[in-house]
Every structure is written in C-alpha cells, then in structure tokens.
Image (cartoon, rainbow, N blue to C red):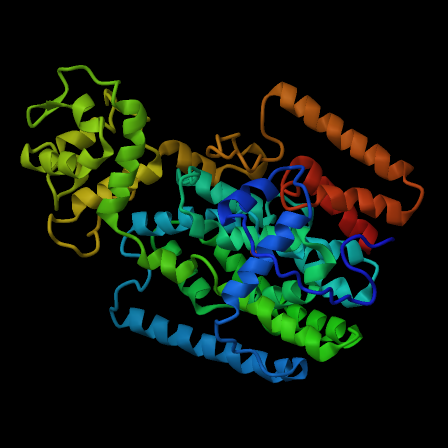
Length: 487
Ligand SMILES: [Fe+2]
C-alpha cells in the first residue's frame, strides 16, 4: 500500500517556524468534523504547541535504549503509591479527588473533549499497517476502537457515560479543556512531518498514571460506573499493554531513522505535549460547587428569563427579572436561602425549591439534567459558609439514567449529545436513519468486496476509521473488517 501519512524510512521533515494562529477550540471543532480537512492548520498548530511545551521538564531517559529500565520502576512506583492511597482510605482518610458526586461528574464533563477523541493521535499509523515496526501502534489504535465492537470502543463508552449522567452538554467549556483533544486530532492529521513527536506523545499518554487508579476507585465509590477508567488500567499496563507497545514501537521505528538521536530528541519534545492544557489534576482542583451551580443557572436563564409569570417572585422580585442578568444569579441563590425556598445543610427534599424539580406535579420537571440536579442537591446539602465538601447529599439518578445504565448496549437510546452532536450511537435512531445507515454499510461491504487488492480494501477501511468516524456503525464495521484483514 502506498503510504500517504508516513514515508519509509521515517522522514524527519524540517520543522516549520510559523507560529500557530489557530486556537485549540477552533482546531478541535474543525478536525472533529466527519470530513475534516487534513494538513496545514494541524501542522502549524503543532509547531506552536511544541514551542509552548519546550520549556517543560522531561523525565525520559537520555536514549531510547534507556526506556527499558525506565518503564518498570516507574510503574512499580505507581503501584506502591496506589497501595498507600488504599491503606490511607482503609484508615479513614476522605476521598482524595472527589468531594461529592457532582464533583466527580464535573470532572467527567470537563475532560469530555479529550476522551471523545481517545486514541486519535495514532490514526496516521494505520497507513503503515503493512510494516511490522508499526504494528504495536496499529494494535493500540484498533484497541482504542474496541476492535470495532461498540461495547469496547472507548469513544462510544465515554459518550454513554456522559449520557447516563446528564453530562453530555459540554460545549461551553473553556479553551484549555480542548488543548489535549486538539493535539490528538492534530497529530492524527499532521502526517509524516510529526512522526517522532506523535510517538513521543503516545509514550507519555499510554503510561498508567496514579490518577487513573484513584479516579476509578472513587467513581465506583460514588455510584458512577468506572468501566471506562478500569479498562485503561488493564490496557495501558507496562508489561504487555499499550505502555509496553509504545516503547517497542519507538525503539523499532527510531532505529530505522536516518538520524536516530535526532529522532529521539523529537520524541522527547512530543512527550512533553502531554503537559499542555487542562489535565485530570487541574480539572479536579478547579471545582467550586457554588460556581458550577451559578454557571448552570446562568445557562438556564438564557431561556428561562421569559418563561415565568409575574406571580413567580423571590424576595420581592420576579424570577424573570432575577434571570435577566447572569450577574444576579449569586444574589438569587442568597434570596432563595433568606426566603426559605432553600434550606442549606439539610436534605434537598426539605427545600421547597427542590419540590419544583422533582415529584408528580413538579413545575420544573425535566428542566435540569441529572448532573445539574446533583450539583443543586450537593449545594443545598452543604451548610452555608461551610466552604468545604458537600456532605452526603442523596445521589441523583433519573429513572431513565438507571434504565440506560442497565440496558443492553444495542438498545442504548439516541440521546441528544450536546450542542456539538459529535457522537452518534451505532444502531440508534429512527427508521429513516437506520435505512441510511444500512445503505452505507452495504455500500462499504460492496466496495471492499470489489477492491482490486487487499491494499485497496484497507485504504477504504482506514478512511472510515478516522477519529471523527470510527464510532459510527460504518466506522465500527470498517474496524472489524480491518482487524480481520490484518490477521
Ligand atoms: Fe482509550
């Protein structure tokens, strides 16, 4: 097959010096479209981000050969730290990451732009499926895609997690939340010019971090299915998993480079890209329960400011007047407290305001998602001026969310997926969509069957396995066919 992403042997293209003018968000939006244009924007973006990352420290060994002795003690240290964490929890220490269920859901929502392009940076490696040295990277990518099985595809799994907890609306996140996702998509589209950096980024991303272990443990404790995270604990392991594959691929491909030392220098630069933008720890640290409630109410106010009658008043002011200016939301919360609509530090059911949201005759039933209700419940349960974590507010899980969590994968409903509508469930949708989808599947099957060679068939399949497409029914089928042909 003629390579379009990377040439043989790996080429170290001269680095362009143009600064990246494109913002993380703009590039993310562009490259996550189904027919994303490849090329120049992604390359210019990477040049800029590599310059940003250049001053970050790098804990990689000085040579690629040194990685064999680097990986094992590193993963042993993580194991030891995790055991210490577990021991501290057994001794009564509080959760280290999530002060409440809403804190955990806030985390899931904030990292959505990254998780919904999981594995994207490796897409270019598919073009080299015939070369043994690239096999570890190809294997990692198709495993991110769950080998084409919706129950194993990481992006499908994460979208379901968001949907099950009412966290699928994340369009208003700040730009830094899109940095890692934009980097991953840029590496997918940048082609051979950034091969060493892509391999370095992969090396960093596929190492098992302590925060993944703690996240999975605490999500489970809070009644949130940790499967997406536990899945990564097993697949990223340093002995046989993606972390090991990352080192194998690096050493084999670097050895073929015209200048292996220069190749490895650039691997180290790519590795440092993992440090940019928001990350697990910064997102967890950024949670402020009241601020998040204010954000939610301000977003509702855009529609809600004209939906209430003049009879709806709090502290002498109509709800419509309160909602007319987002700056007034904190004042509205104080008014809810002072007028007794909300009783802080008590179970939400004791507050009159809560009865507007839940119950047979709740006037605002359905206005707040299960995530938004959880934030409100935790805020109510937290005593005013406590400043600390929410105390045990009841965990809000809608009946529909519980049903979805229990439903078999194929019957997962076609939920609205946020303003961006990035992910479509396979096998979901109305009859017309099914027909169109079946038609696409038939056409792909036919095209592959008629392809003049395996290489031509693989090229067709690879196009459907792009980061923006692999989680659709056609993308999943293409992945399954690709895996079968790969052997
Ligand atoms: Fe993944």
